[in-house]
Image (cartoon, rainbow, N blue to C red; front, top):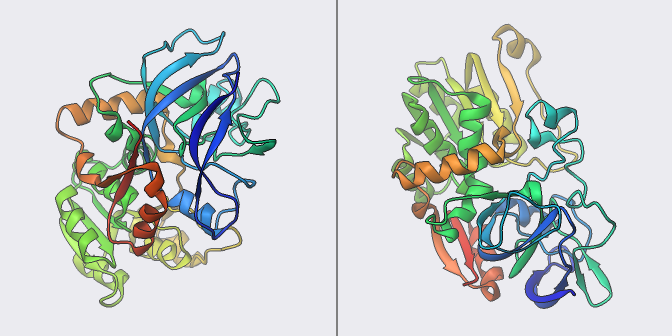
Length: 368
């Protein structure tokens, strides 16, 4: 029987989310039901709400950075049990396509399927209307149905309101450093945009032993946070040309690794300009559809630079999520400091207003 829960529903682009009672289906054989404890507010959902990322049909329950407790499992589930604590990941994957078979689950050929369901049922409905989600997930609700690949069991001692951030901000930021860029001790890095994801790039570079970590942002509060997360140098992007500033800090060479965590054309192109000969630029921010980047071909080729798009930190969730929990429990991974505020579901619109203002890291909805 469908279960009624409270959820934040997006009906129209540009309009506030509405708190409503929706029905959630029972799990299919390869799915689980999770009672959520924490759900983070991410810029990707904000892009959908603003119409910059038309990734879902409306109405929709967004939210893709969540953690909670398993309350029901499908008949085919063998390795997840009721009562397990799990981190949800937007990287739903089939497990057997060309990319999954090679370990690259984050680019699964069926990753855009709605939860990779084995049957045609909708997961969420509002009256007689089907409600979509984002990447097979609807994390702005009290409960969520997840495909088995989208839930990773973690140590029950890990606080779930903090564990929620592992599912997007942590895996995207830290994952990009360790999995895609493979930063080595002593190398130099720049991070453009020090919000929730960018701060995790900074601390990923710190964990990797980077010799110099330059943080670039317009907000003084975010630059101060970046220092706490491991930045060695700060660049106010509003105080002159940030490319010239980064080149000046590196003796004109540029950095080994440049990370862009905003998703706009100017900063994406700046990242490549900040990279040294033989260095690389890693685009993490979601660039809006229709936006094309301009790359100086001759300089790009002759200086042997790399331009790389990175999705979800090029991460295999089953391996990386427990690793991040271990790092946090050892005191080596900063998560508490990412959380600017804990809010209720009914406060979600105010939380996104503060995100639009750009003066804090992460807001986390706490359900229990």
